[in-house]
Image (tube, rainbow over all chains, first blue to last red):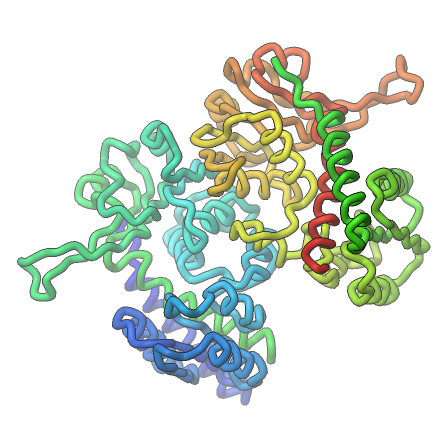
Length: 291
Length: 291
């Protein structure tokens, strides 16, 4: 069993980006600049955004953090987005989700200039992804493709079973892995809550992508020998033996499934750490495209 | 075995649209107006566009046909599209494909205002489709959904196997049928030229969508009893016994597969006739949205 080490891979990617940014600066080119907008005081969101800013510093990007109060109106937020759209120094930006309930998230996503939408959430970018055109692939699916590529996990002609049809993971993964691309050309089955014979299907999988958000859902009896398992789930469960009072569980019963796996991502330390690295990659791409 | 009769269903839809347009006119509302742009002299393209204009007349739409010579430059075509984008009387328009080789098709598709893109080919509309947001679903997938709905073919929890991953049929069908929607909630497997065990997979299918473009590819030994079969293929093959010198074949060996089928589309007269009806539906929708 080989662990798909997201922490190490993410760190490798950041090192590569650092070198590239140093070269850009040496050549007198523009330094990539990522902005992040956060509305309100959600603790988890603040942590995520903080990590993104920190990652920018590490690789030599410029970063701008725009913090808006919880009571910000939709109108004010949209005006802020328009300002970032029009600011030539900003190569890409993200609006941290979720937003306060009085703001229409879809409207906000639609307002971001697709050319600066390094989260890849704008319908135009989702459409380009589905059409296999150059675009910003959103961080989680992009990170999974990158992990599979760097560990040379063969996907062509393999049967991938995706569990979960979310717009941010399950659906794009099923689209991407079926396409004609380096990490792709797989036969892909997408399953979800309405699937009636899930185990029968997962037992056929060469690769399982578990992205349904139910801790330890995928058990050893559901997979065949030498399966590759990508665990996208991450759920906090109470654990009094931990100082924090909780531990993180994936959608895969790791201990038992890993024994049958050729490759498997751990949780934490698998898919999670990849997302920020891919956001940086998209920002670098945005900078190169527009300069 | 029940035939999914696209000719009759298409005619029913046109009748419904006719009534609705009559009502719009009676209420003093705008009459839907579809424009079609054709470049060059391709015979098949002229026939398709002609059929679309004729269908507009039948349901009471206004229509405009823009015929440009083969040697039209990309620049001229883009200017024509911009004119249609800005013409408030035009609710929706299509640019008949394929275009002459000196014109970049993707650039042309990108130039169409997504709100007038009744073909549903613009990335923004493809993205909205993938995100299950209101949009123009392109004619062939939309027609298949409509056939399944009108014949009350159950899709929820069923296993759909799509053969072919084209951007205009296979890929959108696999996305749409897996979504949370009236005709949807299916477990979907997308297969293609790199699939290694196709028969093993099609034998599990409750519904097969064959869209690979190889005449009579799907044979009876590849499907289980009571399967539903959607045949999207349409290939001309020489036939000296016919006056025209050819006959049309689908991707399904109809005679043998139909014997095992619960529902099946014939070729011709199945999916094909649905496409124009769905183009009219999208145009009506565009008109209602913008007025």
